[in-house]
Image (cartoon, rainbow, N blue to C red; front, side, top):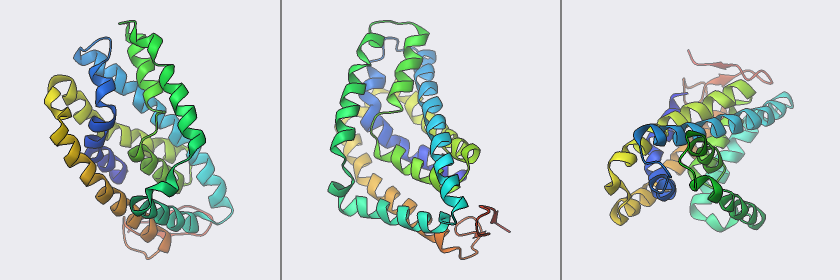
Length: 219
């Protein structure tokens, strides 16, 4: 799960750029309030990991796990160089309606509202979250998929909590630096997914996976 945590930790600068405006406009700007918001995000991420872990498990039973890992790795890299092929108009419309559902909760300063805002925020379109979801699919197990997304969300906490204290993280210069780094993270993850699918027997990078078992030998 180290890859999930590191993806969240180093990719959380992207979270600051994409979701920082929401974090800075929360109805309660206390440290605890910001934590509840982030906790809501993690709960949503974990639930998504559970769902996509089931999906990956089904493909694993069909013996497609390694092929899936290679294909998804290729899609991630393709998305860096040809982002227009990764856009889905229908999802854009659904996410626009989701954003509208935020409004009532921003009118209340209750802890419940902060938590729900975090839950809904976790469903908003985000390239970094998509990368993590791909990782949870490749885990090919519901519990492992959920755990993967939990550690990913945990990795985003330090930077997002820091944002509640240090607003200058959201400057235009920071955002430019962040968006320049994201393609690099995506390519690295894409390559790791491809190597994992190649079953090369390299510990932690491309461990040997027994066919239709999902058991990786990292020794």
